[in-house]
Image 1: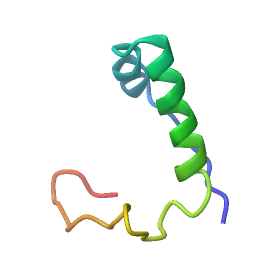
Image 2 (image 1 turned 120 degrees about the horizontal axis):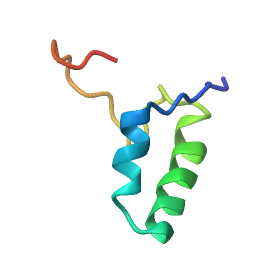
Image 3 (image 1 turned 90 degrees about the horizontal axis):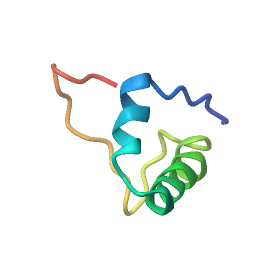
Image 4 (image 1 turned 180 degrees about the vertical axis):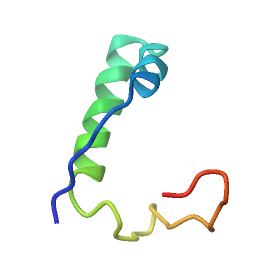
Length: 56
């Protein structure tokens, strides 16, 4: 299943903290790992325990 990724202004600001090279790595990782099967657990990606402050 393909997901639509919306980057908030605050997230953009957070990414701008990093150097351009690192920003490209982060952006590519978001497109690679979150655009497709974002809710599928893998060995390195797990669903976090429920959290009342930051629900997904």
